[in-house]
Image (cartoon, rainbow, N blue to C red; front, side, top):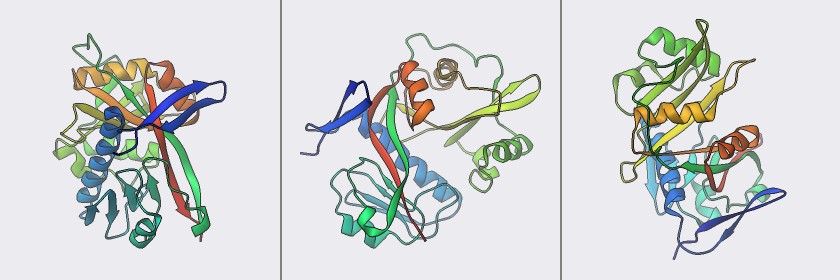
Length: 248
């Protein structure tokens, strides 16, 4: 049986322990993240493989993406090291210790899930729009330091929905909704950002998701202030998501 990650809360934050089968919400979050990787790498024409709990890229990854990703707990470190050639390692269940092999933790995050809204709105909240033209996408990428990742072709297919938030005519924030793994009725949320002096309202962003994907839950991962804000908005923390990077 695969281990389940259960969460408990204390004064120091969230702690996780292995208890049995994988929580289906966690399974959905990890599978949705793998689907994101598949679609992003396909967008760039890059080959990938997946086998026995391990996903990896055959070629160097796009910016901000790992080249190896665990898709099940308990993957042997030797297999991870054999697959790794460049970039980071996404430790989807937080059960790898790669420090003896020259890696350090770049991101120490937590998977989160929000159930579908009971009464999703019929339209997007004021200020939010779907990015549909290349000029706005280019501005969005520049503001988010994401140039070279979301190529213009993302506007032509159903996999990605790029969201922009404007205030007084200026682009002040954004996010991406991904169709995710079709085995799960969830939307993958990622790349939430805001300009200096502005802040994303996670309750409002849930309304955006509800309008675009009524009846679907939402999965993402976050850390620090963003994690606190998402939990305050009703997201449930599920388990650790770490990204390792080898120095040098």
